[in-house]
Length: 169
Image (cartoon, rainbow, N blue to C red; front, side, top):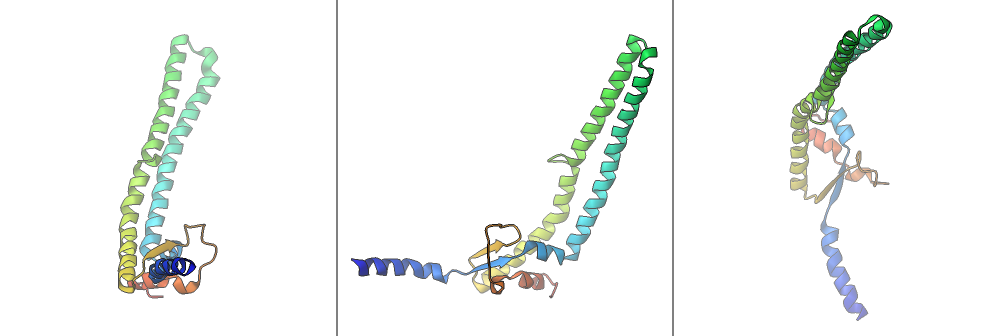
């Protein structure tokens, strides 16, 4: 019985031993791709520009409010309503602009996707080709998986991926 269980266990362990696992470090790969650095800088510039627009509208709303506060005692009820409506409208405009630019499906998200997706696709294709040619069954990203406590540098194929992409290191 024990011999039979050992034989079964050995039979199941053989296919597992044949599988090859490797690691990549996406942070390392991306840092060494100039197009990624350029795309990141472009996103930062756009983000700063859009943030300045949102802040300008917010500042306008704040200025309207300060003016309203200082002049409130001199305004009629009708004028107060008009000023309050203008302040609320300006605040709403700033909030809508912020959502348009920085919301979950906003312009920054779309821009990031349009700039980064081709780079990510290129990396994925290179990884896939390396895996198919060398028979790797699984690729883990050491940069994003905090579950990896130790991994031998021998199984890190990040340099191979960069080389395949034309960035020989």
